[in-house]
Image 1 (cartoon, rainbow, N blue to C red):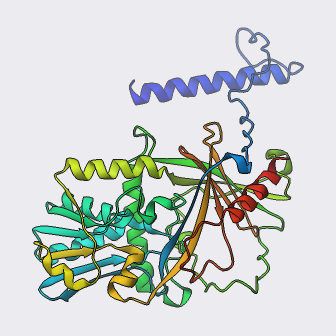
Image 2: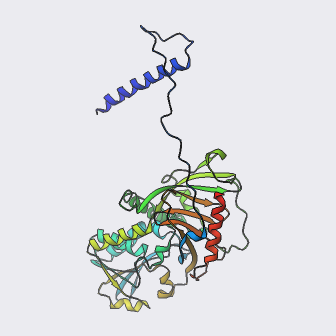
Image 3: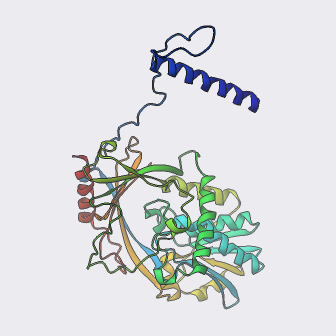
Amino acid sequence: MDRRHFLRGASAALAAASSGAWAATDPSSPPPAGPAAPPPRAPLSPQFAPPAALAPIRARPDRIVAISSCTRPFRAQGPRIEAERIGRKTVIHNYGHGGSGWSLSWGSADYAVRLALAADARELAVIGCGAIGLTTALVAQRAGLRVRIYAKDRFPDVRSFFATGVWSPDSRVCTTEYATPAFEKRWEEMARISFRRYQTLLGLPGEPIEWRDGYVLSDIPFDQPLPARHEDQEPSYPSLDSKLLDDLSPAAVPLAPGEHPFPVPHVARYSQMTFNISAYSRLLMDDFLHAGGELHTREFDNPRQFSDLHEKVLINATGYGARALLGDDSIIPIRGQTARLIPQPEVDYGISWRGHNLYAVPRRDGVLVQAQSASDFNNPDDTPDRAASVAAVAKLASLFG
């Protein structure tokens, strides 16, 4: 339809609707000038249905089908993305993303591949097959490189598979003292590159990436800080997302008591991008192999073994494994544990209960319930604690009566 014709038609329709509304709401007034007054009209019915009621989460311990625990590779300085010579090899490090591995994966891969191209790479070895390794391999393929991945484990047996699966680009990515202007600039570029890539993956079969609404709950007003927990040993983290990326996601909307079903005094609705990791990891692996990528099972105990590889340029994407492989004590383990409940397709919203360390994420493979503890920081123990997940599920159940 011609755009000008559409605008003229729309203007005429709006004018007619306005006249009808006037006649219906003020019949005692004189009719508008013209040969005849328009006939009375019934009040216009609403054009949009009210929001559907939220389906309750069936939060019961007997619906837990999996409990996963892993260690996230946190570095106070932020991710290590730099090149060094080890023997005759150029090794480009790309690890230490804390809780932001999935969120920053495409942008950090872009940085690492730039360094590989600067080293005149034609073939590339990627060490590690988690979120960072696999996306780095794909970015390198798109840059024209022949890529081989060498890894001991692959999905679903890598730490990345046990992530919560939400867009959280500043989750434990560095400490406040290291959030310099230079770091913020590089972090913002990595985050925006990743965000743009994720928008191209929406609507694919299996819904690997999708947007979900969520509700943040609070016992105290949102403008009041939470009480400090003396047992919490974690450092201070910068709020980079709200500072530098406020244009990427809709702002949270405070809700009145009648606009939500939760038994807490303060509630706001937000929108967040989520990763259905089972479908997403399969998509990444299929794309890598379809583009001619090779995957070799190989374990490395020390960097001297890199000399055994054919490729002259390597990207080290071993995540937490880099602590032992390179003796890098700057990597601090942060324990994380999730429980997965039986899938509820009707549950299409997440929950974050401020001050209660409760977080629930709706995914296609189940409702993920995160169990957090004050002792998670610098805790290398990845043994699942069922009691902690049962307690988190019980706390979630308290929101549904």
